[in-house]
Amino acid sequence: MDATPATARFSFEPFAETAEYLAVNRAALSNLGRYISGAVRRVLDLATGVGTMVQLGREQIPALHEAMVVCIDASREAIIAGRRRLSGEPNLHWLQAFAQQLPLKGPFDLTTFGNGIHNLSHEDKLAALKDVFRVTAPGGLLFFNSAFYEGTVVEGTEGFYRAKILRAVAELKQMGVPRSKEGRAEARNWLKPEEYAELVRAAGFEIVYLGQREVRVYREGWRLICEYADYAAGALHGYPVDIAAKVLSRAVVSVLDEMGFLDEHGQRYIPRRWLEVIARKAPG
Image 1 (spheres, one colour):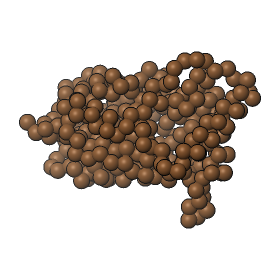
Image 2 (image 1 turned 120 degrees about the vertical axis):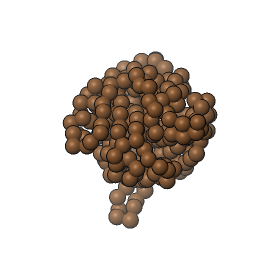
Image 3 (image 1 turned 90 degrees about the horizontal axis):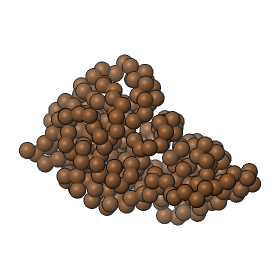
């Protein structure tokens, strides 16, 4: 929900179909369910993509089974694909809009913002949270998570991140791809967990849960993360995004084969953390 072209943002969806992404979000939504008491009649899902979080939420949280859900995304392509993908799901309404400029009055009992808040500028993060607060019912909940924040890198894996960047840059130079002197992409200006907590409180919410969840990311997951345009733009800022994404996805596979940890089945992975935040609007 930023100025990045819709097709670039939408490219996160292939990773959203991987086993590790689905597992970490199932666990996060299951945890969210522990903080829900009573009926949930109206839900707002931001950065809905093709509806993965909506689908997982209804799967993991019984209170959401009958809820009406408004699915919002800035990408028209995502809205079309999501509506088609979840055509059999009842009580879904799709709307193209920005999180920081919600064309809604509410009230909503729950807002979910899965894996998207990091794409907003600092100003827009706060604007979005304030607008969510505006449309949240007294006692209502806000949930968001992200794997793009200061703290996502697990201790002992720093060398993996450096190596994939260096290998990608070496290939780009060998290809003769020019690099501009533009500033760092906003998506790469990651916040610390406590900075997210400050934004949430500044918007009017109270934090009821803030945690980090570690997940093993395997070869295909890393390849798809690196093909995600916003990630590539942040990691290799200044290079053409489409080329950077392709080169980075090749680099990460070779580096993972050399530096990844071995699991019990002999498969290589690098762990990564997801931030989870649950907040509540004070009862009226």
